Length: 357
Image (cartoon, rainbow, N blue to C red):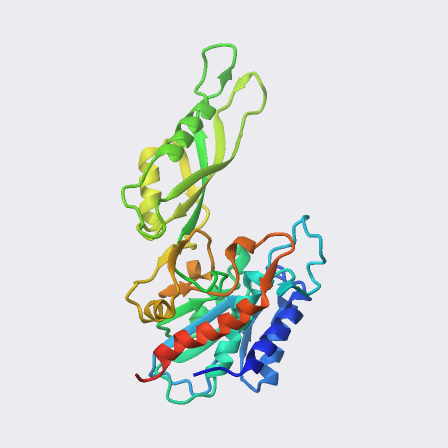
């Protein structure tokens, strides 16, 4: 089943409009307005909670399993390397420039076009829910996590992020640790006290060298990186505390709780995780959506970057037009052909699931 070329032209026009409107995390209200109005023009009923918009297919049947089509419309702030106005959409040499064009505007509008393609079709084997969510770039609590309980039971999700339309079948989770090493104050000129800095250094060296036993086939090893440190009040006082921060990227081989327990067993510092929300994820290579993508010549890989997958408690796959390497870079762009191919491939993948064979 082919799709109407108008869906692509409308998707491109919508993305151009979205680029022209600042939509930083926690301030996406104006782009939410635009997406809501798009549904109104299409005469598709939609729902809104804060800056999140979602809609169900016309013949939604609560007895059927449901597929969630999700992407985000918030962006990071433009960096100082931009040579173009980040809010001016320009097409040059087949590239659409503008902040959020690649991450994740191309995915957002391609999934929306896909949803519209199937919206009024009867006798689908799955329901479809499309959601355009907020605060993805900061893993905020007022994005997908806020509206998920309102969506009903779902079978799995397709999360739109730039993957060159290849299949990210696993994604690393994130755990940020605030660590405090304790010692005892003393005069630096004498053999007094217990230097908390040295305690911290020993612990940091453990973080640097420790290797977890289980290695993920797609994500490799868990990565732990000390990123911040602070200690001491003056040059001649042995510090009694040292604070440091560790960034932990967790694979699908371990839960956050397992990793935290291993860490606590091996270091002297007190460890406090900032959050256990950002979970790793994986999907079986035998899952129907993965097999559908493979049948279309797509490849599989493990993604080191996080997305709304981390906050979804259901099976999910990450796939979308664009290239992750362009995300958060100056003069961000997406090829317009990538959007057209993205819509086509999304539809062809879902065709294999939504209709009786």
